[in-house]
Length: 346
Image 1 (cartoon, one colour):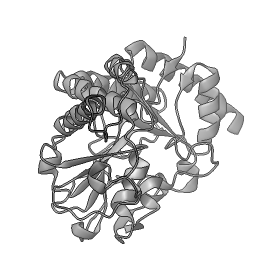
Image 2 (cartoon, one colour):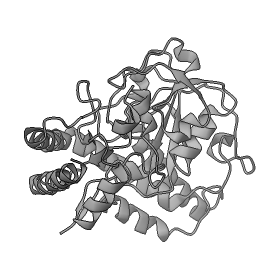
Image 3 (cartoon, one colour):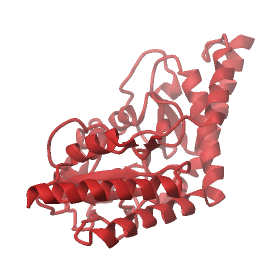
């Protein structure tokens, strides 16, 4: 029986999102049309906008729907000349000067918040940052749905989020903007999304995003992620007891409740991913957007780890559906493969 342990790459579609999307498929109108059918479509878009804003604690802010967090990053960062760190997701790093200092625990020092971008949580290590007041942009993609968030109290001017990280569909995300912020459109044309992102709205994706965000907020309030954190701790303690020299980057600071970065110097992460896949477990060797590229993790290298460690890391990211049996079976099989690797390398 397979176990999906790669929730930071993408999450299973929530039933609430699926149902909302199916209902939206039956809508005929274009949200920009003024007739009854158009107004009905527009109402679905605006209801979902309110759901996303409420779940993110962003009531009163502008939620601009995009094709995902990557497009949201481009909309937020293009032409702004912001500073970031090497641990940022590629979608952010592509637009920022990544020279901000990162310590051994993965924490970033921000000297000029108004000219900086800083992720809320790292997808590989799970390390959570303390966002400074006045921060220009934060990638909140990994934290949204897993951590209690309030954009309005975060001190940020803009935030990036994505639906498929919290049980919504792929291909839809949003840029959340403090009202009154100047923002130059990158896609121009019909004037949709307050003139900030042209193009007919993806009603089906937007409906699914709104439903997923609302369901994720309820799940978080009910304490589901506390149980996930307990499973993550069981996983790490089980591995550590049998292999005490295993490295867990970022373990000494606050992390996402579901994320464990596990490093074995010399044992290639790509090899581990393939071996565990054949054993029935879906994991990754880093961000899904960079996996498949045989190279050391730039996140771990930025934290000061050498290539031997950075290329020997895997990411295990749990979800609310994950069971204790899943993590114990994973630990047992992974440890067995680790012993065999050590015997070959001796």
